[in-house]
Length: 337
Image (cartoon, rainbow, N blue to C red; front, side, top):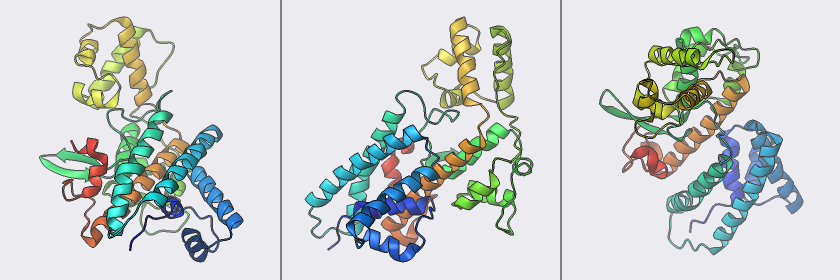
């Protein structure tokens, strides 16, 4: 009879997703932790250490770590209560994991992330019209497909760089691992849906990387509003941003609002707000921010692919956009509408 996986097994999936290297004797210790085979004090210390390593891998600030840890404890307590009360009977492992993901993990994570964004967006500078770090169904030239979370972050980065992949790669750090593949090839593979290695993210986007962001809209405080607004209009024209695409990029979604701004019919306050939102969206990110967002996207993409393999085995196609077949997409239903 299949059983509900313990919270330790779920935690170790995140451990694998971020390629955290906490355990020296990884195989045996991880297996014992998952099977609850460690002494109690060692078990608790190991769980706390893994959680801290995950927070470090995600570059969380101290205040964020405290809240994230309290959130983890809250979710873990609820999950363990569910584990004791669920009678699995003849259910398969796939059925159990599917229902837990659909009715507990996804809603719980969405709720926690929503709380984190109440006082301000945690993903400042990213397009605001959709939830990032989820696989996205996109139609290009009449052909629907799934764009991976990592590919979306790479697209965001290339857009801000405002140059070709080859030109952008010239400013990145070289790999310390002595790989045969060039940086350009690796980045193209990420765009195609490959799962990055964490050490590549760290190597390529080190603090000494020389990146020039030509696709940004910096704010000059010495400019008048009219000068700033005219420059914003030129930026939009150069980026070929339509009204509909702007609604996906900045939080001005009400009908007619952006149209009024672009046609010079909006108030000065509204035009100033438009320029600020544009500058916030098209701001140059730090190398730390780039690394962090690529790591989060990698974690999400790993979970997407591994869950798909669990549900469908080798038949799983992560690029298949049909939610009736690719059932993992049903967990992000808003992206499928």
